[in-house]
Image (cartoon, rainbow, N blue to C red; front, side, top):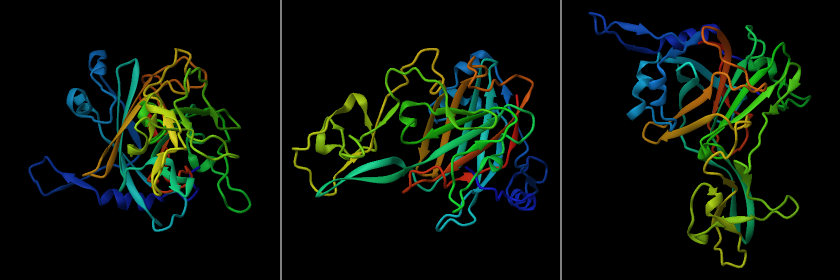
Length: 346
């Protein structure tokens, strides 16, 4: 998944030295160097404070408790050479809380564009599918105390032509992976929870949903036409369709060229029972157009009770790696910005 060319310690150090905040000392001009990478400390809060955390991608208002958490910053950089983005480097800002029952994570990263259309249909004589893009965040947690599993560099593989292939976990323990997508999971306020056993590839966690969180708006690869349209037919211009607003596609309607229909249909919420594991995590992101940043809030039980999830134990540490992407035109996880492994202290 991530490439093996990770940022060097010297580059990270120089990048860290360039980032300063105003000092609270007697000398207001004295810079304070912000530490980057290392260990993210989870702030412990009361159960009542935990109830005030609203997972909506907006950390203000009633969940002002985030201000008590210590900010952690990690460098991310290109994982694969990208046109016009060679050498890209940025910071991801993170905060973490726990009320002894749930783990709360807030992530903020820069993104020049809000991309929420993984696929669309464009009218051009007839309906033609177009791959567009959606932004995403991913996190990988290691069940062991070393960085073998949590290091994406150790799980990246390429074929003889140099193209990325499916990730593989060399071990020694299970790896838990979270994948949030702005177009397919964010409307439902969740993310996809996956895992990799030792010496195994990626598997989806167990799911018992009555309705899929998202479905491609495609009849079949053999007969590529949209199945659904919005109930307001040609007047709809949204990024995606909700199931409860989707009706059967009417090909007899006069559709002007250049008109678009979303390529995915999504649910408004996760309809599942306690056995749900794939979509058990609550997550919602919000894009600030003025600041050009995504803010994502995530909530998961410390111990879900499922064997395809790694439990988070108070007082212990776990290794983690994260990645983000700006995906305006290519709905692919292969071109993204990844971090080195870091420690989470519960």
